[in-house]
Picture (cartoon, rainbow, N blue to C red):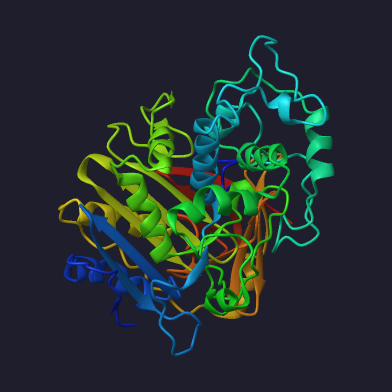
Length: 456
């Protein structure tokens, strides 16, 4: 869920085979070389991968559940799925719409205690469909989100704060333009639950999870499920905190297992007449197309060729990836208890493998040792614009970068001056002058380079 660098660059051990019943799929030989290096290079503590292809399934597990422990993850290990929750929120909306409880074009104001945010175009109110397709015009996050604990940033955000923000917020443009919004999808989950006078968790379990047999997909875990929840780690392999999203649950609060997620994928690929099959098909329909040709359904992001539907998610210590290839009857899920975008990259490769393509493993990046005093010499604030920059700090022999208004991230040395991120595909390079003093750095991401000048 974090919007890493969104402000500056636009844009989101040995393997164990744990096969689901009656599985005949065997992708070990193709997937092991893709996943193993992430464990060996300490990019991820543990990874579980699930694939369904034309009714055959396979679950592959790598690494461990606890760093330094001896327990391997499996198909029943539970993880936070972060923003992949949004696909479930969209499924809930579709199911309620098909049941006649709501309509996709219902105005948001119908479900709020006060008026919805005013639109520049009075004839275009925000609808439930706008919320589910990130076209509401609402910002990525509410402006009054000021977490007491940045390591659990949504925990103390209340419904009173949410509605207070909505009451005062003025849309900058009418609904209809894509702009990814955690606020919008979290608000959707909130209003659907309010409409049925219950909680998002209970509503999702009753209307989606129980009918699909998803016993491990929920927010509130039982004591037994808590024991199967893999502990979270940040990209630097340090213990992280589990996230709580009491008000914006629909944006990223769900926990699940690989086995459950495989069943969800199978339900999305089904062709029967079960009550939820029609609702899940509804979520997959293209509803808005962006300038680059990509599109979005209800929750699902759709590739320009229309062949792949996918979503990923990240909290402080987890990452998830989910994909459907409906025409090929293929689904892929990847879950990890490490917050790194490498899991999404891995998921894309696994999807291609499942489709019969030949792929190469992700490039492996090795780290070098750097003297702690050298790291301290890089500390400072590096301005990219008058309003935005990177705060660099040296802590305990490691280097950290905190973009303005965003979480602090560890960077890893590839040389004496070049460092890379594990959470995002980006790197920074310190630029010493003729006297050896570093007064600037270069940020590289998505094929772009941005120069930042040091300000003491």
